[in-house]
Length: 210
Image (cartoon, rainbow, N blue to C red; front, side, top):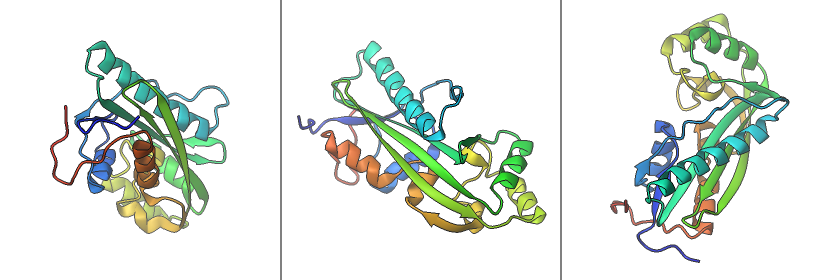
């Protein structure tokens, strides 16, 4: 069923990168509602399964919070989760400098994969998902490369310990797939998922419904 013209998007994330990516393609979320969920991988969980599970969990958690407040009417909820992996090994977010150094040493000169799960929950409560994979190879990083990057602070809180849209873009020898996926939200797939479920894209500059 087509969405009403006053349908609104709620982004179940506090990530400024995901917000910026949506704004880049003319979508201004009506609300940001970061879902506080446990992101610990389950035993033997594959990185792609982790990204799918967490994106769905974030979207449904935010939707249920809106529903409990009686605010879910006409709202589409978008959840996403990005996971960086070497084979089946999840490369965690870097919270301290030691994490960043360890991650960069692991990725140095090697190919890795970035998975982003995207989940949309419609106003009726129906959940639809996509999983996007991008393959990346880093150059062999020198000690100076790593020290300079760690000093920049760009790694803090980032999946895999790096931000491709910053200095780490200079480490990339090869990228196969979606660039925006590596930043945190695959735009083509996200737009396809939203419009496929009936979300109406507003004209640029339009004020989103709340």
